[in-house]
Image 1 (tube, rainbow, N blue to C red):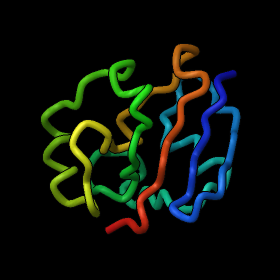
Image 2: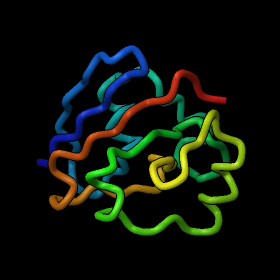
Image 3: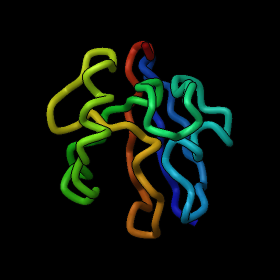
Image 4: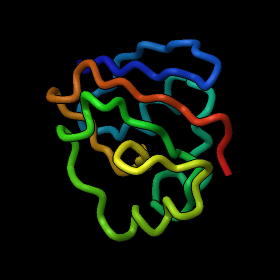
Length: 107
């Protein structure tokens, strides 16, 4: 099972096992990781699962699609090249070791 490291804005790390097929957002939600609100439940209808993907992983993820890009316009302090909505990132074995940094807040 892939391990994903979620790093809170404060620096506190949460290393959790996330089953393949779930999303990075579901992995945080199901393991009680604070900082990902996921208000829309993963429908890509809000930006409350926004996170910064570690630079080492940016090229290993699928590209941002138009709907995600539109929703990122509403996210707090986006960063080009690293801001993603975690509800749009399916977990696979290839994501074992993924590092996700959480923003100061979700809006």
